[in-house]
Image (cartoon, rainbow, N blue to C red):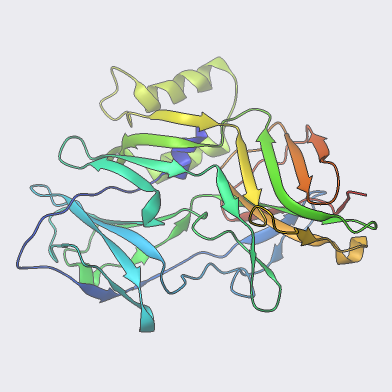
Length: 324
């Protein structure tokens, strides 16, 4: 179910026209993450730009969609210098519908705007560990899904995109007094599929209602019937037409390329090495199994049945774990 929350907005298709917006300066904002420890306690504010605020990087690509009622279309815009986004495709500067944006553009794998505003989004099963020039861990590139819409602007240059983080993150810390080196980490959800290709009718997405469904998730029959009616109810004209293919309950954080030595772990709890993985909402509701692969040791498996559910805008910190 909750993969619906991962794909709030997006779509595409192209055609040539003399009127086209080839570039624009983004007028909008991104969100800030907060951190919470596994044991609970106060939230610690932080940013992913040095204080956990999501920042676009030069070379990032987003899809901008013009849901014009007669000729809906979209184009991929890439971020260049001075916060200017440019496209080599077509974008009508005027709309009588809405503007939408989705990041990252590469995760929109197919779309049919003409026939029901349908699109398919990929939640990738592999993410890639990375650090900045100072050695601080960064979120995996192109793994955090964000969406925005402007329902009032009629011209793209006047649109305001208030990007919302669709996912949250799991923060893991490991240390090894014996000097183990990690090559990859697999996280297996105990309840939900957490990756796959999600298809739905984008014009039917109601972010407010999705938030309500998320906050009130339950296995009871009444809730599940309400959910089924929203997803694909035959008598519900506002159902979102939800389907998912190639689904799996495992996501892998790849830390090094094949044959490389691995990420050397800190040797004490105070110097534990941090790893971040982007997770969809409600992942880890009934726990997980973490399998850690090393270049110089046997696998270590950690089992948990804790309710450490993932929430948009939250980095959930696990307690530092000694892997030996």
